[in-house]
Image 1 (cartoon, rainbow, N blue to C red):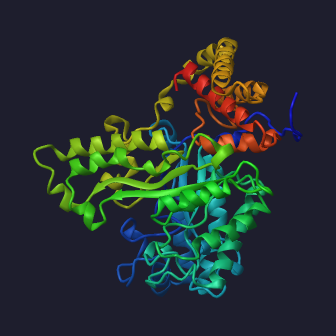
Image 2 (spheres, one colour):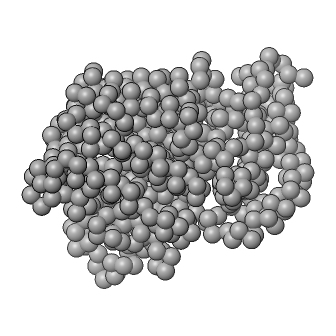
Image 3 (tube, rainbow, N blue to C red):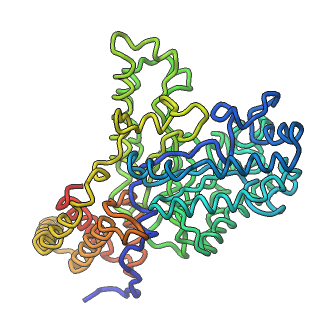
Length: 509
């Protein structure tokens, strides 16, 4: 019998949308489509454009060809950003699961999102942008591909770079009350779209804020609270602003097992590049490669016990295989091609081991396939340099047999796990009260969850062969849904974890 008052459980089998959101995300950022950058798509800019941002491009095109022709050119570029053959390649050859899609606040429909901003005079140009984005999300979803929507451009700019949408050189998002409120309205709009059926893998609130954005976490609190009132199931991605340790502390405080009200699961987006800083330019390629396994150690000791600490889940929102010319000048006698392959393999391995997903920068550009910056070049099956997780290569014909094996071994694995839990607990704290039935119940939930992820939900819902990749957030979700109070919920949590582990061991993923 329970020693506490439990609430009613709301646990159900994972849905197709759950799988879309909580599986491991092997993917890429789509690139310069709805937030254009001149170095990626110079063809989207007239030659006489004075800057390299979206705003300068739209101004220059209007001067050159007029408003309606500019609108037509932009809409054609959006429509042709991903062809059907691109999507098929991403799914079948690159083994991708998720696309990170950068957008700007100016891409949302209606004058309310551009009023008082530099994009206000050009609202007409972008009147079809959101419809285009929705259509792209739906096309990808029809092929079992998720979309992480990323507000790359926020009002006023979260950083001074031109990928924020303007060439102002000013980061005025967090310092302006009106910009902050507009940013929240943008997030609320996406949340309402999510509630109304737009199936998103997640929403990234802001891209690469400046390190010195002092009010950033206050704004995160406001934005998350606003979104939670509309759709508390939508995973929210926050940027670490180049300070992962601080973001982890924030995440642990937000992703608690027993919140006072419904709140979104929070993921942390961190970016890893080795080609920009002065320090990295002084390193050889071999030095950089040796550094890869040392990254993300800030996570050490923070995973594995949501009940006690809260949950942390990191994704790599951007990475590449690029190094600076200064580094390549130090490569020695080893061919560059060999070092690029090692670099890509090391990054793939590290991110799959420590994160819930990784998104290569980037997929689409004028200069395809993109070299060390190009997802197409680095994912070519004939010379693969970045690698999907091993379970992505399991042939569909093998899935049924593996599932049958998992069904046949469920009793054996459960009795072993429960027996080990009993023995360990009795040895550790034999005089302490225990409720081992919670562990067994959790084990059954975890095993079944992993089974459903791997089985999929039918060809039109979500495909086969998935693995729970965002494990910490999935465990958090199950704890919140269990209805259990604080006493002994840790036994349920550890049961869930062991059940997932045992299923993965049986099928070899």
